[in-house]
Image (cartoon, rainbow, N blue to C red; front, side):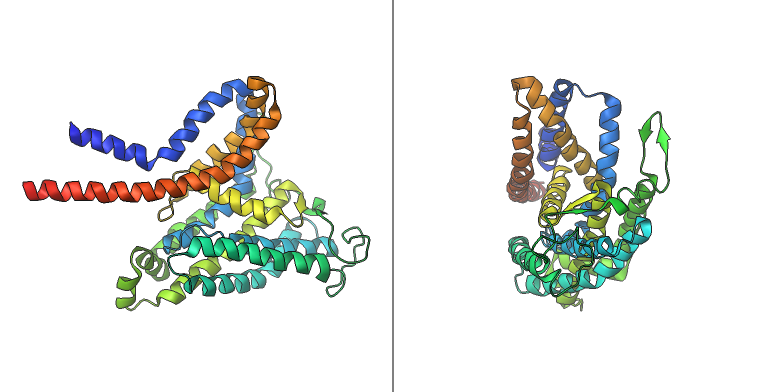
Length: 366
């Protein structure tokens, strides 16, 4: 009986964050008064929009580097590619592909830079990547605000500030808006399904599953479990960690391009910040931790996290008469869930240690 209770507590501890979100969503959905078809449509849109970005976080976690807050560097690279294709007026799927081609070398360089820095900060990768993201955000804004239009020629006057250089705060991506989502139109009972985008995401999931079985993937898992043991086994630890960050940064670059083609507009100076924070929060909501994450965690987290985003404003309006409270709740949730997940991760580790000690004592007693 005690063992069953202990196992039940263990399950609750391991899935505390998803359970909290399920309970809150079950409470908020009836109050929001949204129809089932509307919520299904919204979740499909948000799954197609955000899943690729969240999936890009899995590989650094596998390599033991925690949550890659440095993914915003890849998002910045993707946005620079989108600025160029918008200036050159390359539209549709070819425009998306050209943006990816332009931004890939930059994403590789930024990923390499991030990986070199994180190799100097072993054990403190998350906070280091977070601060590095702030630093590179300043560099990105300097380049986009002063470099474009002066050093880098921009021919489209609608994109440039009135002073003659610098990109405007909002970049119109009408030329590629929903070009991937509507590539293979498909609907069921009035619910539109972005089939082409889901095919791309499915291919990415297949790549993740395949990559874990490769020699490099096995090396990353070994490094994630114990760097000293991996080094003793002849695995190049620093190189393996560096490659994981480069791959994650490049994938985040592609994820940001997919994200923004769905939106159709780009907040030139802030879109990458939101993408990184929301992707990490969604992964944690799905039950992932700093040291363990799966594809299932990605999709569960995107659904639960964005379901909360959809229903909270209307729930706030009908509950207390102020929809604005729901908007504030979004910001509170996105930052608060990251803090809560990190605290719960430390708590879970302590509980696992206590559980292991009790198991050892039980074995000795027998």
